[in-house]
Length: 272
Length: 296
View 1 (spheres, rainbow over the protein chains, first blue to last red):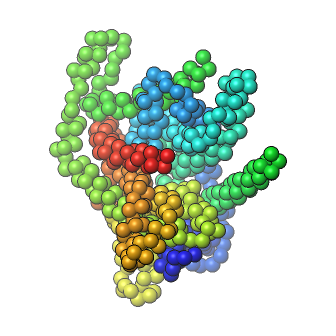
View 2: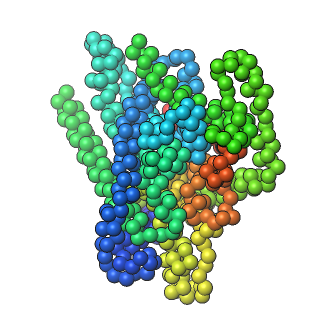
View 3: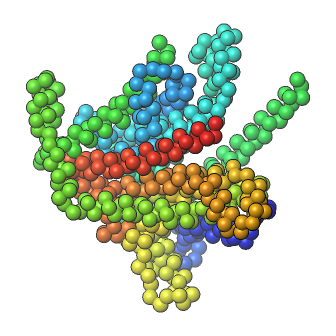
């Protein structure tokens, strides 16, 4: 507590007000009765009703969820493989190129990723649709998964795997029975990260989607260009609510499990 | 065999969907525009073999790049992107540092909650967070209503659709990227160093300047790059909050591609943007590398 002065208290208060007030205003005004979004005219939930009847938003939401589930799942498998190869794979031909390709998409501007993938799809004559968006999202989010998983792989004790191998496990069994359970939290957070990135992406999807697969961000963007609308406020509120519940739940679960792990370790230490 | 598959699958995926597309951009940036679909020539004709390849090489030129240097629009767009990214990075640092500092000083039992509060916006839709500022910054928006009500101003300020709105948007959306690395650097700092500095006659302010800032340097550098690199190619923020005179290269590339349908020029714009980004990216990686070595 030594230096927790008024200065620190002020910067925390002002900082978090800055981070949260815009979203709070959005949430409050989604319950506004008036179509004029900056004038309060009384409480109403009509915009939620009209949102749920808007077929184009519902269709876009469905496309987005399909894309996000498919791309984050493939990205998690590929990203975990890439991380394992980079951390445990030893030397192989083209390793430098590989690690470069894993890290480059993380810093690549979205406009360039989108443009280059679109030119590829057109070049090979692939019709744009849900499938091409899944390919595009998988490619950039597998790199994020790989970073998350490899940081976990680096930090855990390699001798556990070696012990399993010495005791007669095949390399695949050693991975399945020893490595995977240990890196599981990182794999899960990698999946969640990939899922969120896919849900959120506007630029890459705009390039690779084509007219047949409008995702929710594309739909929101075209609506928002016309200015503020109460339906978008309602939609934003729903999305913010889902994310908040998800993140808070995940942090409580991970705190509980780390506490349980601590207890187990203490019990094990006492037993020996 | 299993090892081979393990390496080959992610490897080939990235070659096919990252490396090859990038080479295509490079190739098209050296081609001429054509009124056809796809709207560019030449196409590499694989069936013609070596002669086709030589023919293809013969048709390549740097015309699009020359075009970019001749039209002042692109030059101004690159300069103004660099300027906007640089100014917003400095602003984000000025806003983010005090928050990270206060978080590191906060009692231990608050920290997980504070950290969660910083991370939460990061999981929330980027588009929605940018959108939320439209209602605040517009002429009849909440900020103007508030300022008129307090009597600070008598006529509404025009903020939306100006560069100021773009700065606010970038600072707001990238703030967590600045706070987190600075916080993790400050958190590792040994508090007794400050006490020692004060015992040796430093004032609080000079102790902060001579001890705290240098020790959080790596965090500051990491945070600045994490804001600067994506801000440079930003598209959503300038197109929603900026005005028609806000020139950013991401927006120019988008318009060149979707409105003008000039793919070769769009590709050339992309190639130059990447060349500009190479410098900060290499510097960032070096900083990370140094950090990792120091931690070990």
